[in-house]
Length: 433
Image (cartoon, rainbow, N blue to C red; front, side):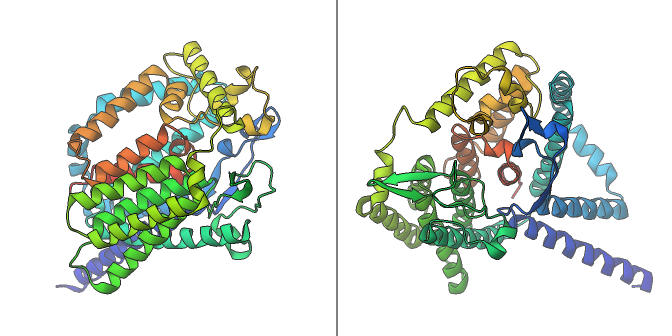
C-alpha cells in the first residue's frame, strides 16, 4: 500500500470513529436539555414567552450537525451519490413531496410563518437522524449501551429529587434539571394518602416525558439482554432495568406504568431470554403496587380536575381549528399562536393554558390538516406492516409505546427530547437488521 493510500485509509478510519462516537453521544445526551434559547418576537403569544416556540440550539443539535457533516464528508470522499440517487428512485418520493408541499402551504397561510419554518427545519433535522439510524446502526448494542447509561443516570436523579422533594441544582442544572419544589406554581404534584408528593422530573420537562423515555430505553435494553451475556454486562443491564422500573413508578404516570408492566409480561412469555431479570422486575412492580401508597394513584382521579379540564379544552379547541382549517391546517408550530382566537371558555391562568393539544394525532391534524393526518396515518400503517404487527418484536413494541403515549401527550412532536426519541424509534423500525 502506497503512503497516500495509507494516509487516506487512516483518515477514513478517524472519520468512522468520529461518526460512531458522535452518534453514541447523541443517544447518551438525549435526555438532557442543555441549550441556548432565543426569544424573537414570533416566540411570544399574547405578550408571553412560549417555550415551545423559542428557537433553541441544544447540545444534541450541535452533535447532530456534526454527525451530518461527517456523513457528508464521507459520501464526498467515497463518491456514493449514485447509490443515493438509486435509493431516492426506489423511495415514496412523490408522496413525501406532496406531504412537504402541503406543509409549506400551511405555513405560508399560518399566523406565525417564521415559527412554522423553524418547525420545518426541526423536522428535517430529526428526519436525518432517523434515516441515519435506519441505515448506519448495525448493532443494537450501539443503541442499548448509551440508553442504559441514561436510564441509570435519570433514575438516580429521580430518586434524589423524590427524597429532597425538589431539585438538586448545581452541576445538574447544566444537564437540564429545572429548579423546582412541591411549592413551585404549576409543578406536577400528586396526592398520596392526603400528602402532597412531588413527582420527579430528572432532566426532563415533565414526569410523563421521563416515564416515556424510560419505557422506550428499557424496552430496547430488554431486547439486547441475552442469557449468554457476560455477567458484568448482564449486571449492568439488570441494574438499569430495576432502577428504571422504580423510577417509572415514582413518576406516577399511570399509562406508562401499565404499558411497562404489560411489555415485561410479554417479554417473559416471548422467550427464556433474561427471564429471571424480567420476573424479578415484575415482582418489584407487584410489591410496589400492593404494599405502598403509590397504588392509590390509580384510584384517586377526578373528572373535574384542572389538568383533565385543560386537556378537554385543548382538544375542543383543536377540533374547532380542524373545522376551520381542514385542508392545510393552521400551520406547523402554529397551534399555540392560533389558540388565543379559540380560547373563550377556559378560565385557567393564561400561562398554563398555552400548551399543545395532548394528542399527537389531533396535533398533526390541527397543524397540517386532513392531508397531513392522512400521510401520518399512512406512514404509521406502513411501518407497522413492515414489522408485521408482531407484538413480540421490540421494534413494534417501542412504536406501540409512542402511539399509545401519544394519545395522551404531545411531547413526541413538540419537545427536543421527545422528537429525538420518536426519530430514534422510527429509525430502528426501518433498520434492516
